[in-house]
Amino acid sequence: MTTIRDVAKLAGVAPITVSRVLNNTGYVKPETRWRVEQAAAQLHYVPNMLAHSFRSNRTNTLALVVTDITNPFWTTVARGVEDVASAHGYSVFYCNTDESEEKQERYLAALLRRRVDGVLLAPASNDGASVEALLRQDVRVVVLDRRVEGVQVDTVRGDSVDGAYQLVRHLVERGHRRIGLLSGRANLSVGCERWPATSTRTRSAPATTWRCARPVSRSTRC
Image 1 (cartoon, one colour):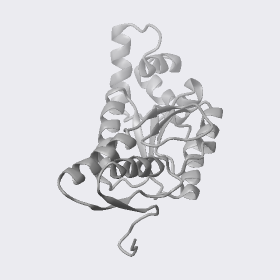
Image 2 (cartoon, rainbow, N blue to C red):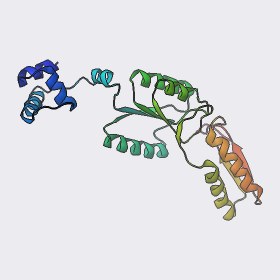
Image 3 (cartoon, rainbow, N blue to C red):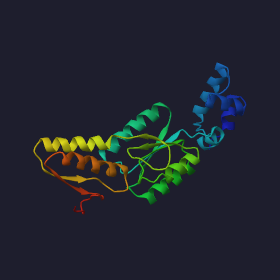
Image 4 (cartoon, one colour):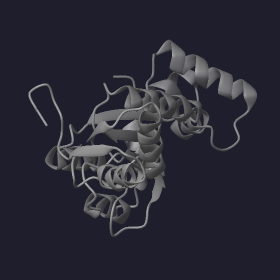
């Protein structure tokens, strides 16, 4: 494997000069920079990013931890995250928890070992312990779509209350009177918020709602 010393020898400079060129730190004469870049290209040199991360305390990596990347909502979010991250020199790890708190904890532990710079997390429950653990390790965290309890953290989420209200209103105005709500798991903030909004709207109209507060799959009947 080619080392920084090999590049320095071919370019006729000291290893510290190669480091300055490759990390773009410190002044290097243009002709010297050119020799170093040519030598690195000729030897197909690949910098040791792990060693660099230990020196800089940054890995230029982020993680997007969501419930199911095949969900069209999260697919759109993932594309947006990757586009912005790439534009700023970051790579993104994708993790699917399948709404499992155990799987979420395994992923977060692995991401901490990889020293990611930040985590965008759609939590598997309202419990804020996982977020708090990340913050204690000085990892930047943004919670997506859901609310966690007991911890202050940056959050980006839709208005589940008004969204549910407007959806039921749309159905009622079109004459529907028997309305079902698949609100998801009862320990998630989005499910907890949608049901009161739905029932509030139907109390003001001649309609009845039923709620299913558990995951729905092909094998599940409500």
